[in-house]
Length: 222
Image 1 (tube, rainbow, N blue to C red):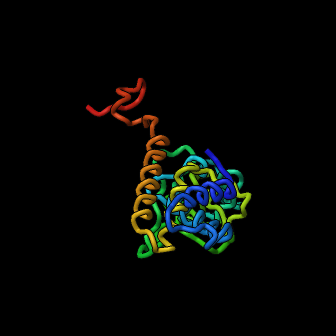
Image 2 (tube, rainbow, N blue to C red; image 1 turned 180 degrees about the horizontal axis):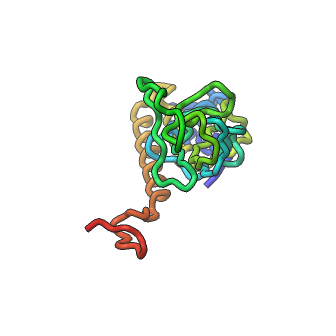
Image 3 (cartoon, helix red, strand yellow; image 1 turned 90 degrees about the vertical axis):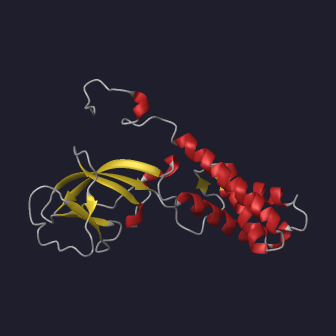
């Protein structure tokens, strides 16, 4: 489901207009947009999930350990931050590459197959490098497309509409500080709807899910 910031703001203000002691004219649309952003990133930055509307997997070229172009994500969003690089695989490989610990020397990463990745800000819009630095080839990257702020009112939000509405209303009432009971209610509704949406996106069985049983031609534990 997707909605514009305008649609979410209007629905949140309509919801709040029914709450005793809350006046949506106190802040109006410009401030309400900030609460929509707050609700959005409360959902977006879930540590163990990348929302489908912002997830992208693609193959990118590397030359001498450095990406040959800007790293792009969903809807050609430029990925600028390492935290939005979810996994990197050597093309054709099975396991994601590990990140080099800041405490570990890279002296041993001198040649041969890809061993690891490391955050880098040396080149804009290329948020990681591949070790060894001699590596030239392709890697597969799973990314999360982070929108820039402030959101324009026409910004399309690719998250559950109702969850963001509840989250914006919760942030609004919490900021007013005059109705803690209503704030707690909106928080409960927000988190409940977010978990419901998470379960919906995770409904498909994974390849190693025990519910699938044995897959022909694949390995099995005995």
